[in-house]
Length: 243
Length: 112
Image (tube, rainbow over all chains, first blue to last red):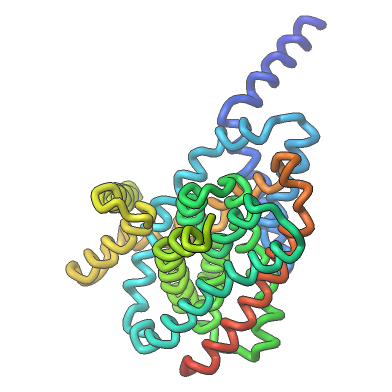
């Protein structure tokens, strides 16, 4: 009996290091969070990524599995972000005739948002005495993850902090969206998509696709423009400021 | 499904190659998205297969951010000292910028 238990113990130990366990953990927790989200009429307040991230972090801490092991196990999930980004070309193409008519307002708002988002976030953290490294990691917070990681590498920020901050900015964007659209009295779901794409990148865009494919296409457009503009300007801006 | 995956991965590869050749700061997948978008204009629309695969993937877009989001709970101790500043910058910063951009687009954009 003892040897059987020992075998089982050894087996579960090695299982924790295999991709199967970490991958299944992500998918199971996310499926559960999706179920809860749908039960609550897709309320922004219980965003499935936010709920899942907290639950998974707790489970990892309790079971003593390192974050590195968990991330290694989830390479497949992370990889799918690439082809999914490419796939956004299709809604962009399908809704292009509508997007074209709003090109100027979208462009102006993107330019404003892409400059205001890092300036305001870094300004607040600077006022609260954060270190240079933290300030740099906060700068690309509103752009989509692959662009943000690229920028973080270029400006010498901490990639792990940047990635976490970016994902949580996206979640916050979704959580805050009902309040923001109520306060600004912005009822048009397409224009709401623009605001979400600028401030909450892929996480916000995903939320917009739940509302409608036109809203999602507007968000995709705004997200792509914000990311591209930030990637082209932020590294030079930071260099010019003397970092 | 398979055909759709192949098309998407192929365009991602083309994007990565383009970025590597031009030393552009834009990530490969974003360049791939632009290339596919151009190709769709030439071809006048996606095949049903590509359309279906894209729809399935986009539906799970937020799931693909999850492993990276978990990382926020496992930051080194020297960063944890700055938690209040990081949280304030994320919450207040996002709220202010969202509100300002919502006001701006409501003034500029025309509703349908």
